[in-house]
Length: 134
Image (tube, rainbow, N blue to C red):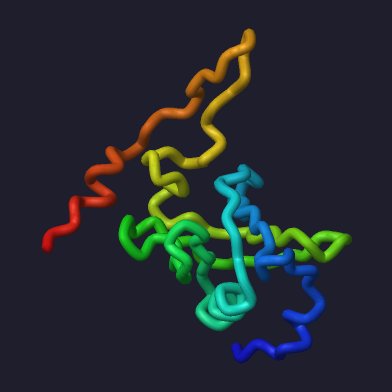
C-alpha cells in the first residue's frame, strides 16, 4: 500500500525527525522492544507489512530480522493521543525480539535495589549474528 504524505504529516516528529515506536506482541500484549522510526521507515513499514526502524547509531533504515531472521510482521499500527509515539502490534517471527536472544528487550527487573535478569536467553546471539567476514 502506497503511503499518502498527509498520513505522515499527522505525526509529531521530534527535532531529529524521529518518533519512538513500541513493538508489542499482537497475541498476548507483551511489550517486546522500543525503537525509533522516521518518515521513510514508517512508510516502508506500511508498504512492506513488516517493522522497519531507523537505527540512530548506524544512521540508516533497519529491517527487523534482516540479520537474525527474527522479523516482525505488522498486524496493526496505532498513534497515541499526542501524536508522538507509535504502537506496533506485531507477530514476532522466531519468538525473539531482543538482540540478546531473549523474547523481549525488557528482561531486567528492579528488585531489592538491583537489576536482575528474569527472562531466559532463547538463542545464543552469536548464532543470530555471526561475525562478518571481509
